[in-house]
Amino acid sequence: MAWWEWPLEAAGVLLALVLVYGVALMVRRRFLSRNGGTFELSHRVRGGRPGRGWLLGLGRYSGSSLEWFRIFSLSPRPKRTWVRAELTYVSSRSPAGMEQMSLYPDHVVVVCRSGSRDVELAMSPDSLIGFQAWLESRNPGTDWTTGR
Image 1 (cartoon, rainbow, N blue to C red):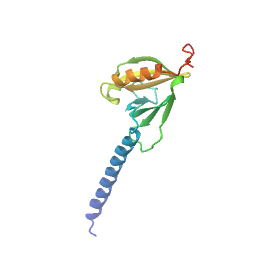
Image 2: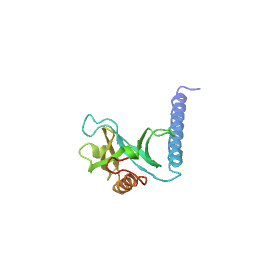
Image 3: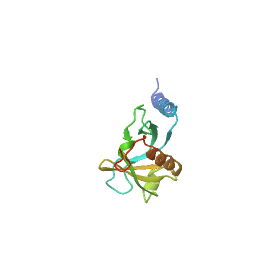
Image 4: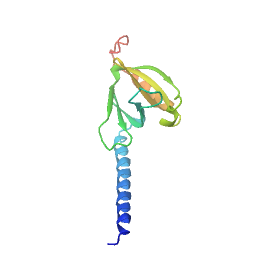
């Protein structure tokens, strides 16, 4: 084999791997969306510096929990899960500064409280309406003063 054929073959293998990865991501998203209730949801995992720490993802309602999947992962399991009874809506705002480049266009930043920690999520305004409705639709007999 000539020396110039090695880089071409390596480039072909690399292209094939990228295509397989792309198809696997599409199949995974289709698999996660098969029962409905999914939407684009970003999560801020590191809040140390303003505008940093956002990861794009996909949210899915599963009974009384909200599951978050990283968008570029092949794992069929959620990376984070929040239980509805432990999640409280605090506020929402427009993305500021560097956040505008880190998030999907037209998304709003939502601040929630889970236990003693703040959780920052970003979603579309339409998804926010559904999220707030999901939070408020707790089981009959819920004590609204304590959230349980």
